[in-house]
Length: 404
Image (tube, rainbow, N blue to C red):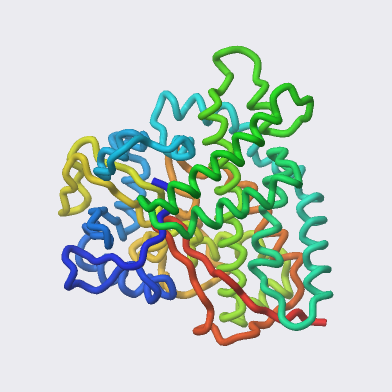
């Protein structure tokens, strides 16, 4: 249920071409386009033998995201995955709940991420971004856009929004790094999950009775039983907000910047016309989705996707990335065009589980593209190192030189 590190997977049988792995991380679009031409959904076997279904077309992916018969409940999902044991507390996040529980949890935090509330954060986001650029300029040699900018910008912003103290931030980053790199079901993964829960429990515990106006304090000290979260819910909520609040945006900034640097005509357009930046962010989201596959769902009844029937009790990953490259929805989908109109990408999901933090991610990406100076790649694109899980896809490093 957590984003899993995957080495390689295959369609249907182990003699088929790999769907995950290093080559897939670098370019997932060609193999998935070939799959889309064959069927709207495909059964994939992971190296540990787990069977998952992946959708590859826009219409069917959107249908899966909007289907109320698709379950997200953590216990039901674990059963569908046929994993023994109990659900770890950090896995009981809002993304793995169904109504009415999901409705209750979402209601408690939705006001923090309205467009108006997020817009008020722009001056602070710009200040953080400008400070990071200043540090990059002072460094000797090329900067790493991921470590020096794309990660610390959204991480600082979400920590301030939630009220995570400075002294606790390195501990969270270290725990997340270990958790993201550990294979699911291993001793290392369990240890990393336990460490993450320990770090978050300490942060939540410190908020009890605290008079600050941050989001975590508001959740911890909410009045009335109907609005109060349990300790497990608080830990899971903190985990979901911190991870989703920085990992996806870091990938958006990193992936998007690389797209522009490898498409110089498009890069020149936004360098000369800042008014194109908001639309450019949406096109970058479509073209290189930072969340490539939506978090796991499971079928509670048989689901018909085109001519494919997915039986009940199966796990489904909605293919956001491949859906965004479906030529039946987007003309010439493999061409980056920051002047493209029409919208409709699925990078934030769709339906009741659509990303709550979308307004914040959009604003952070807009600020990043506006504040960053002219950049050049410091290494050939084929030397860049990608990381991929069953959910996220992004760069480990992006060496760049800054214009003087």
